[in-house]
Each structure stands twice: as structure tokens, then as C-alpha cells.
Image (cartoon, rainbow, N blue to C red):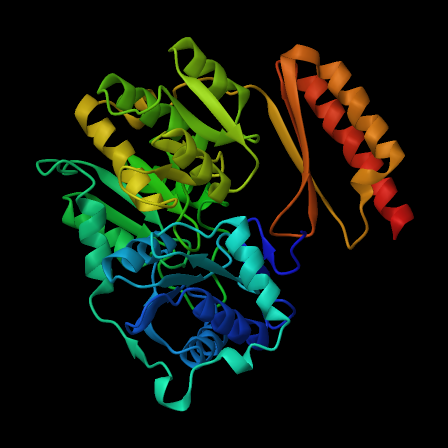
Length: 451
């Protein structure tokens, strides 16, 4: 069944427009609250958010919905998504909620749901909740005497900082490293600099002044240029860029060269394999990860399992096949020894620890393979199904034939924005560029005809 509300990462859209309205948020609280009640104990939900202005509206609407369903709400305030995944287990909550649109601009927002085990909900559970959203759920709501309560929870930042620090060996110190940390004016603006400083690093924080509008604005993991500039300016050893809800990370070395999720996964996979911590002799990535990563792993006797785009699908594959490292090129990296979701800070700490152990510059440590030339372009759409047009199907078939065995082609609708993403990679960069441009042109024409 196709879903009207949920996409690849929860519910997401422009704030105060369907589906990200206060009414929908309240009904999500009601439906999710009713779906996760099991037993006679007081049921509880942990509710975090990032720093968007619309977070106030969505938060209060969801509190109303959960309380109406008879659940007590623990309000965490601005906090990273992985902290919500951790705290739903630590506080023995029945459900966790993160209000965030991740790397999107401030005018978007979203709702991510976690089960009591700290994992994002399956398609089946999302479909069950979605089926309730347009039904009359009032008859199933709590009686007057069983309404839920809401309260702010103190000390959650400290809990998460200690959790992140404990992912490193007890004797590990980051002293001697000068680190620039870009928090994207988002959810980690307090916890990430504090954790790095407590581990002994010299910390240069940037984009740590959220005002409700500047989250991800020319900063963070999707805009690492300002991070690279600051690293050069202060002569830092490395730079770390989180996104708005801190579940993804990209880094830059001392020269300002970007270290993306594929390079980070390659580093961790090799490090953990050498220390016999890598489970399953492979890692999980999506169809968007670079062919160079696959070749790097293959040369070391390791396998790359690919899934469709979305860290939730990466996690599901990791659990099904017993693997403990997975992620996305964009910087979502899941290390299941520590966390049930992508965690930008914890991932960065693993990279920093490896740099400290080798005592070499980040540029030597973090460049594990030469990426195969890859090009991604987006085509914005306003409706219709241009990928079903005969002209588009023919162009895709032609492109696949031209690339042959030396490249890959991935074309898919975005699960978070009204876009068609066209990606090609191969050993011949001119061919890759020509293939992408030709498909983009055909999709654009098909979109125009459909409109």
C-alpha cells in the first residue's frame, strides 16, 4: 500500500502545510500513542526536536495527541536524533519521537518515530499508524481520569554526552587534536562541542547559534565549504560537520578535502576488520554509495551489501544479516555495537580515535580509496509520474547499455522532497556526464508534458 504521510524517513514536508500541520501532528500523537500501549503501566513517550521555529508548533500538537491517548510525555528539547533513540531505551519509554527535517531548510519539518527498542519503525508499523490518521480515533482515546502528563526532563544532554564518550576506550584521549565542529545551527549545538572538549580536544565550534531560521543554512554536512575554510583559518587537524539533527556527519581533513560517508565507512570497516570487530565480513550501504567503496572492500575480502536509499533500510538489512557497520554516502553511518540509528558524533569519534592511534594526518588516514567519477543531478517535479513515460524508459535503457559493466545508473524519486534524482558513475567521466545530462533532459521534457 502506498503511503500518503510517511516517506523514507518518517513524515516530512513544509511546516504548516499538509502533512506537516498541527492537526496531523496531533493525530500522529494519538495514533502512535494508541498503537504502542501494552500492559497496565503508565505509558511514556520521549519527545525531542531540533532548532526549527516550527518545532514549537509540532511539539505542542504532539503533546496534546499523546496526552489524549493516555501517554505521559517526557520533553527533551533540542537534542540529536540518536539521543532520542538512546533515551527511549534508557528511560524505558514505549515510543520515541524526533521532530526534525534533518538536513532540509528551516521551513521544512518532520516527524521520526522510534519503537521501544530504539529502532525506527518498520513499513508495516508506519502503515498501521497511517491507517489510523484518517479514521475517527476519538472513541479509543483515554478516559478523563487517564489522560497523560507532560514534563521537561533535565540532564538529558549529560546522559547523551556520557553515552557518546563511552563508545571510545576508557584510556582514549583526543588531546593534541585541534578540531573544528560545525553543528549546522541544529540539535547538537550544545552536546557535540562539549563531548569533544571533555575528551581532551581543542575545540573550535562554528554554527552553534540557532535562531529558528538558520538551521543547515550554508553550513553543516550538506555545505562543508565553511568548515573547510575554518579548518584552514585556524590550522586545525580535522573538521566535523553534522546536519540539523546530527544523525549524519561528513568531515574534512587538514587540507580542507571532504571525507564523505563512503570514505568514513571504508575507514571504519578496515579498522574494525583489522581488530576483529567487524561482524559478517562486510558492510551495508545503499545504491548511492560509490563503486570505489565496493572495489576497496572487495580487494580486502569484504563484501558490500546494497539496499535502497534510507538509513532505515540499511539498519533493517544489518539486523537481518547480522552486520554491525552500515550507512550512506551522505554521512548516515550506523554502528550497531553502539547505536540503533545513525549517529554523527559517535561516528566522528571512531574516526578521531583511529587518527590518534596511527598518529598521522587526517589526509593520510581518511582517504581510503579513489572514488569512481560520480554525478548526481535532481529534477524538481510538481506531480505526475515522469519515470513512467516511454521516452524516459527508453533513455534509461540506452544509458545502461552505454555504461555497460564499467559503471552504474541509479534513478529514483526522492523520499523527502519533490525531486527525481539521477545518478550515474563510471570510469569514464565524460560518459557519466553525458548520460546524466541526457536523462535529466528527457525527464524534464516528460515533466513539462505531464504538467
